[in-house]
Image (cartoon, rainbow, N blue to C red):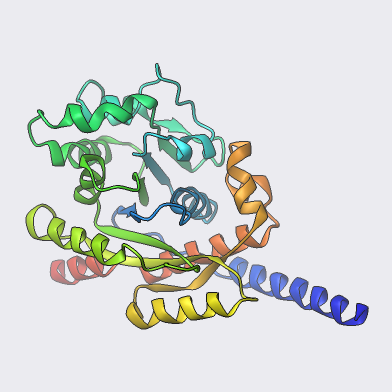
Length: 302
C-alpha cells in the first residue's frame, strides 16, 4: 500500500512539473484591444471573486497589464489584491456617482506590478438606490471605463469586473461595460441552478443595452477528480457549452481557499500550489482563445 501511495505522489509531482514546463515554454498573446470581462454567477459560493483575482493575477504574471474593478460591496477582490478599501478611500462608488474619475480611484495591487485595482468600499452598498435617480444609470461604469482607457498612458490588455451575486443596477452596469461574460461553475450538486436565469438576463442586456456582450468563457471550479459527481457535472456543462467551457479546470484546493484570508491571491500565497498552476493554465487558455467579438471586429476592419 505504501509503494502505491509513493507511486501516486510521484506521478502527481511529475504531472505538475510537466504542466509548468508547458506553460513556461509558451508565451500568451496579448490582445490587440482591451478585453473587458465581467465575472458573474447569480448563484453564491461558486468561486466568482476567487476566480476574478486569480485569473487577473495569472495574466499579469504572463505579461499582460490587468485592471480589476471591484463592483461587489463586500470588497473581497480588493482585499485579495492588497489594496486599501476603507470607507474614506476613493473607490468605484465615487466613480459611479460622478464625484471622481477612475484614475482617481486606481491603485496598484501589491500582488504584481502589472496588476491594478479600482476598489470597492462599504459605501457601494447604498449605490443601488442612489443610482436610480441618475441620468444613464445603466451606462455609468461603461462611460467612466471608456474615458479611463482612452486617457490612460498605460495600455490595459484585460479588465475584469467582479460584480455582486445578484441582478441589480451594479450588475447591469457590469454587463453594459463588458464585451465578455465569464461564468464560473462549481462541480457540485445544483451546479447549473440559476444558470438559465443568468443567461436570460444576459440576453436582455444584449437586446436592450449592449449588443456586443457575449458569454465567452465558462470555467469549472472546485473540481474533485476523485468523485463521480465532479465528472458528471463537468460532462454536463461541456455538453451544453462545448465551445465556451475551458479545458482547464480549477481543483478543490485548500491553498486557493486560504489565500483570501491572508489578503493574497493564490499565486502570492503559494505559487507552487496545484490551484495556482490551474489558474495559470486557465489564464493561458483564455489568452490563446481570444474573443469572438474582437476577431469579428478585426475581420470587419480588414
